Image (tube, rainbow, N blue to C red; front, side, top):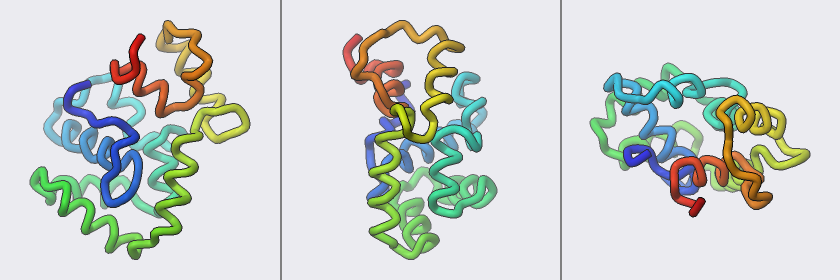
Length: 143
């Protein structure tokens, strides 16, 4: 999806925050596609893991992104102030997030379910995580 960045793109030193910000912006504009609406803020999805890891709420994320007026620097500043610019916490998230969906990791069952539900058409064993599957689905990994 052209208007949604890769989960590997960092904002404020964190994977997924740039993507999450993009999804929230599109949601606020009423332009987020239906397939992206369902998992937005979902507790069992990447958004939910991100929010729990950093102790964030849906309401504060919506307000922050809305008030940022499309300025990623404002979102980054808010985020770092909100979490206390905790580099260890960021590093922990970055290590966890790239493994979401892998066997023995959080979201393994969720990823398997999503692949079946949405008719995932690849048996590539390298697509073993949520982030890699998103990359493939959105055309950033060759099919």
